[in-house]
Image (tube, rainbow, N blue to C red; front, side, top):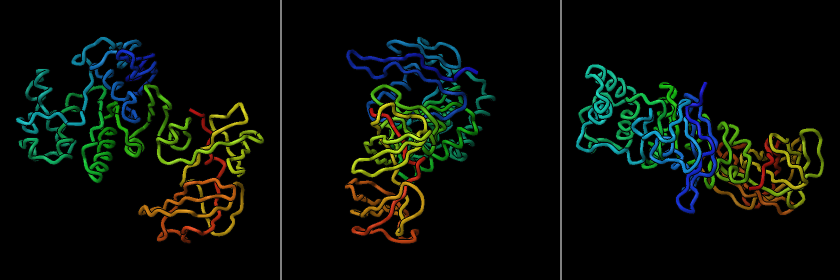
Amino acid sequence: MNPMVEFQRVTKRWGNFTAVDQVDLQIHPGEFLTLLGPSGCGKTTMLRMISGFETPTTGRVFLDGVDVTDTPPYRREVNQVFQSYALFPHLSVRENIEFGLRMKKVPPTEMNRRVEEAVHMVALTGMEERKPSQLSGGQRQRVALARAIVNRPKVLLLDEPLSALDAKLRHTMQIELKRLQARLGITFVFVTHDQEEALTMSDRIAVINKGRIEQLASVDEIYHHPKTTFVANFIGLANIIAADVIARMGDILRVRLEGGLELEVKATGFCPDSTRALVSIRPEKINVTPQKPDGENVFQATVTEEIFKGATDELTVRTQGDLELTVLVANEGLMEFACHAGEQIWCQVHPEDAVLIEED
C-alpha cells in the first residue's frame, strides 16, 4: 500500500532562509497525523506543499503514490480547513457547503445527497439556511469542515483550525474532529503548536524544529520516550538532568545525576556510547510517599514550593545533593497525605520512567 502522502528529501527555501530542510515523511492512509512545533518551525510550509500552494525548492511530493510536486492545487484530491474558516459571508450554510460541488458540476441530486450527509455528520441539521454571522465559532468551524469533507478528498489538511475557539469549545471540537476522522477514514494532516491538542487527537505526531522532524512516532512513544531534549521539553513537562553512566547491566544502566544522586535507568531506544548522558523524568512519574518505600531508585527530598493546579499540585523538591526536580501529585483531596513547603518526603522513580535522551 502506498503512503497517502510522501515527502522525499523535501527542502523549501526563500533566499537564504530554509523553512523546510531535507524532510523525508510518509503519512499512512486513514491516519490522523499532527505536525507539531513552535511558530516558524516550518509546519505550515509543509502543509502548503501538500496542498500545492507552495512548491519545494528541491525534493518530491507524492499523493497516493503519484508525484504531485508540480501539480496545481485544484488538481490535487486535497482539501484544507483554515484557521479563519474562510466562509463566504453572503452565502448560507448550505450554499457554503455545496460551493465546491457546484464548481465541479456535480449533478443536483448527488449534490443534495452529499450536502445533507455532510450537514448531518457535523451536527448542523436545521441550520442550513443561516448565514455565517448567525453562527457561533464552533458552528462556523463545523461548516468549514463540512465544506471540506463533502468533496471527499483523499487528504484533509487542517491549519490550526481550533485556535480561535475558547478552551471548553476547543476541547469539545478536538473530540468531535477525532471521531469524525475515524468515521470517514480520510487521512487528516493537522498543524498545531498546542501539545495537549496533538496528544488528544493524533495517531502519530511529527515534532518539528527548525525545518526538520526531530521525532515521528505514536503519541505514547513521543510522550514516554522522547529522543531529544527539544521533544522532551516541548511535549509536556520534563526534568532533564545531566548524568554520568557508571555501570551497565544488560539494558539497565546505573547513572549518577548532578548532585550525586544515583538511579537505575532502562535503556529503551537510545543508549549513549560515552559515559555522559541526559536523563528525562516526567514530573508525574516521580512517586512520593511519607515513608521510605521498598525497591530501587528511592531518595529523600525537601519540598521547597507547592503550586495548586486543580486536580494536581506542582511541587518543587530539592534532594540532599541540591538537585531540584519538579513533581506532579494529586492534590490534597485525593492524596493520602499532603505535601507542603518545608516538609521532607520520599521519592521513587521506576527505571523504565527515567529515559535516556540525546543532546540537541
